[in-house]
Length: 403
Image 1 (tube, rainbow, N blue to C red):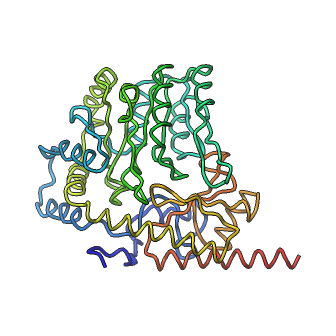
Image 2 (tube, rainbow, N blue to C red):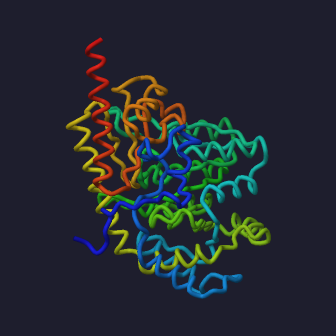
Image 3 (cartoon, helix red, strand yellow):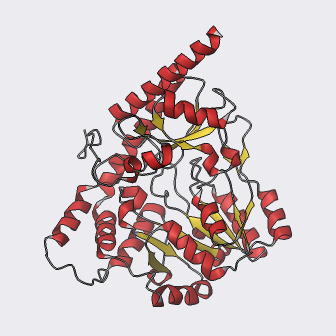
């Protein structure tokens, strides 16, 4: 038994939790009729050292203007050095209240309407939404499924063709990749960097899941792999997924190239886009200084949840295939053995299994036939949900056999 308890079931009703309170709007059902396993936050209590820091700050009844602690950026830099072996100068860092918001700032500063931006579907859907919503043009460089059907690689030849022929201004890299859970290897990242520098493409690297590495796999920050990567990259990260504090908007960015960051950071500062609220800085500093033991226990628990999911489905619903993630608490679930019809799959999960998952189609047409399953919950809750899924699969198969 560890110091922290991840088995406690916490009632989040009445807290305006998006995972629960948006079910009627997004799925047409309420939390009483389905189990929500969609949006990427965890059902675990926040690290007590983080809550302790926030409670101590709130014990003072004056909530005035605030500034980050003097050693705030040194604390972030120390975390990156300790966890990922990445030495980052503090003057290359800036605050941003959310990774997607940061990507939007970058798009609006460095590109014009009509400029092209490369994404690699199936991929985190806000990449497309924020690009097209700001009048830019998405160019797809889809991931290539491996021969065994349970993994992917980058199409680097296709990426160079796009860079050479489409002349995009920017690329959004997901590292580790959401939803398929891949940590890109150093050789792949170096080649992306080489191509980006050759064709003058800025690479935004979303590394928000980089602290949630599983099975002893190491996170490789894109900007760290070569001089080319350092020259072209804008990296985003956060303690939000790591420590289950996404509601605090506590993200950071790193731009190692001073020519790339100088005017952009000035623009961020004068518009107060990089001015943090004290809740974000207090939580981040507590997380990075005191949260490592909690994180290590969390990672072990998540690995056991993933193994439990693989085992349960293999025994009880083998028609569903797990794409094992190398990072994060999100499982890319291959449902093509159940049905080739994405709309049918979505309705099956919602109305037959009574589970609310993310549809694979929201990550691009390449995600059709898949669903994204969030397993960051107490194991009893997870096994109950998987039991609902297995029973629904068995009933459907029996129905098909009877026909």
